[in-house]
Image 1: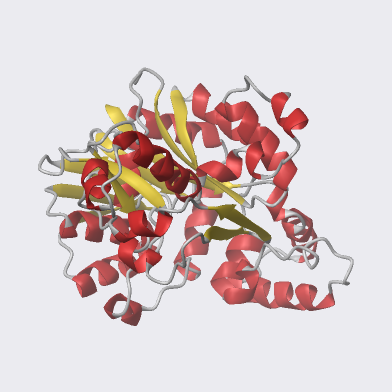
Image 2: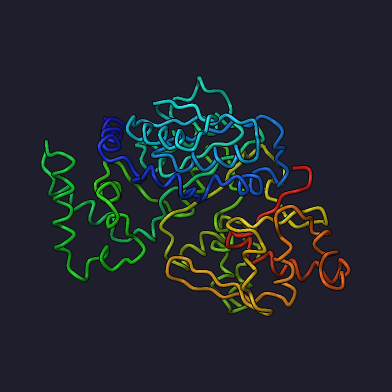
Length: 409
């Protein structure tokens, strides 16, 4: 019955709302499932783009992940098959139209549930964003995805974060009290608008500047406040679900956001956290920041004992800027500039080393670290260059701006 309600919701209100004309102007990108991220966090930067690649978009919605990944794979000439799966035929139709507008032929479309993947085989990569937290028993979904994963494959997941969604569940509960049996989706949306208008300034949702989906469209309002099945996760909750399914977290996105050292300057406090693992530190950072409304993670199987996250460990690593080529990123950067970033109301500024601009001007996605070193003014030796690069890489990778691949990939 719950699956029927979820399906009916997205038949009437496909989400997120997408304009087909946008396909001529831009490619909507995000995390997870950006191809450079998949290579960096799941395959150690060594994904062989000449080999066939199978990906599943489980609960694909209106197609952002499917279209982004299909376009990236097409641009890289990867022989790929992307399987799009969703309960909603309306959402599927939107995604198919977007793919047609782009001339993408590497997506196969299916209507169905991610709980029933037996006939689809195994995948190198699975994307599941904004879906697991809508299942009656989310662990059934985690387990289903884990079973469909190849031994060395990986998952990109997004689930709601509890602390950043303050007030959402208060309003959901009030609307459940107000909605009457038999009312249409449009009736419910009208009722929700009336309630939102009546919320006093003290209401927790009104006081939460992090949540705005209900302000963008009726589909966004329904998804946020009228959903029939919805839960949020703390980091410990999410880690437990992942590990129970036989998976482990390779990385949170953005990595530095889940590091207490981003927020704390007191060395004594940080020393007390030394020795904690990734999950413990991430849980502490979540409570410290208090603003995480979603969690994005890359996962691999627990029996995959390889180091799946690429690192700048030698001269053959190739830095790749995620959002713009290095020269474009660095063009207006004065010498001695800092790297600035904002995360849901928190602003950060991190110093960069003297050679930062010169290094970034050479990071066009093809040069190895050694080639960058040799092209720098004066061609500094490796032992002078490497600490400078590391001081560039740490903040940019920490905010998911710089990734790595290797020459063989």
